[in-house]
Image 1 (tube, rainbow, N blue to C red):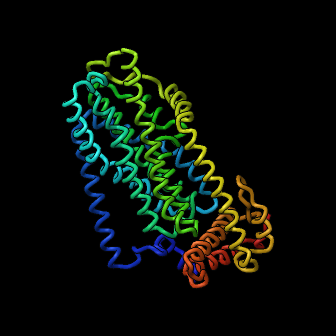
Image 2: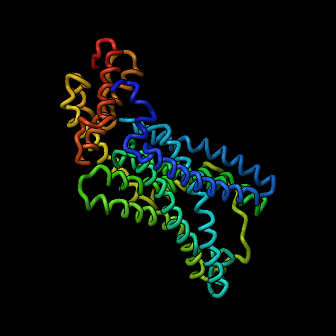
Image 3: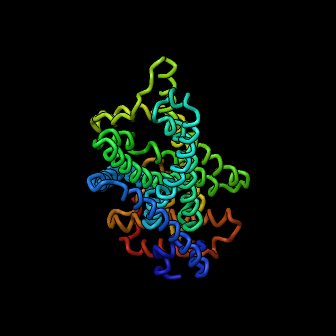
Length: 417
C-alpha cells in the first residue's frame, strides 16, 4: 500500500457502508431528503419574520458563530492525540445546526400545541401558571425527548458512516458536543429574533450570555456530549452488555440534564403560585441586561445545577485519557523498529495526561503528523482486534504504518527529544 492510499476520503470511508456504491446512493438520497426537509422547516421559520426581524436573525447567527469558536477550540484541545477529520467535524456541526433543529421544530410545535389544548380545557392550570402555561409544561417534555433523540441519531449516523473516526469515549464526547454546538448556534439566534419579532427588543445579552455560559460547554453541548461519550464507551469495550446498555444510558442522561434545565421555569412558576403570587396576565418582554453579567451569573448557576454531569464528563475524559495512553503503549510495542523508534517508544511509555510527547527538533509540522499517524495506527489496530479481526489484513493499519515510516524519512535523523 502506498502513501497515496491514506487520503482524507480513504480515512473517512474505511469500514463505512458509503464505500459500497448501491448503499451509498440509497443512504445519500435519504440524507439529502432529510436535509431538504429540515432546511425547508428552517426557511419556513425565517419567512414568518418581518424583514427587520429576519435581519436580526442573520446578525444573531453571525454572533453565535463567533461565540461557538470557544467551545470548538476546547474540543480541539481535547482531541490533541489524534485529530478528527475536518469533514466529520463539519458533518457533526451541520447535523446539529440544520438537521436537528429543522426536524425538532415541527415536532416540538405539535407537542406544545397538544399541551396548549389540554391547558385550555383545564383553566385552573392557566390560572396557576399564566399565559405561558403550555410552554412551561411542554418545555421539559418536548425539548429533551425530541431534541436529544434527533441529535442522538446524528451521533449514531457519524458512528456508522464514519466508523474509522470514532474510537473511544473522548471521540464520542467531541462529536456529541459538536452536534450540540451546532444546535445551540441556530437555536440561540432563533430565540433572539423571535423575542425581537414579538416585543421589538432583541435580548442579545440575555440569550447569548445564558446560552454560551461556561465557555459554551453547558446546555446542548453538555447534553449531546454526554450521549456521545457513552456511544464512544460502547465502541472501545469488548463487553457485549456494555455495548448495548451504554448508548441507552447516555440518552437517558442527556434527556435528564436537558429536562432539568427546561423544568426551571415551571418550578419557579409553581413556587411563586405557592407563595400566593399571581402570574402575569400577559407575556412580558425579556429584560435588557449585559452579556457579561448574564454570562457570569448563568455560568455559576449552571456549574451548580449540572455539577454531577460535569463531574461525570471529567471522569470519562480522564478514563479515556488513560485508555488512549494504554492502547498507544500496548499496540505500538510491536511497531518498534518500524513505525516507531526505540527512543520514541520510551517517550510513549512516559507520556503524561496534559503534555503530549514530541518528536524531533525541527520540522514541527512533520513531527506532529508523525505522532498523529502513530497514534492513529495504535487506535486502528485496537479497533480491529476487538472486532475479532486480524490487524495485519486491515487497509488502514497498513496505511498508517507506511505513513509513519514515510513521515520519519522526512525528518533529520528521526530523532526524539
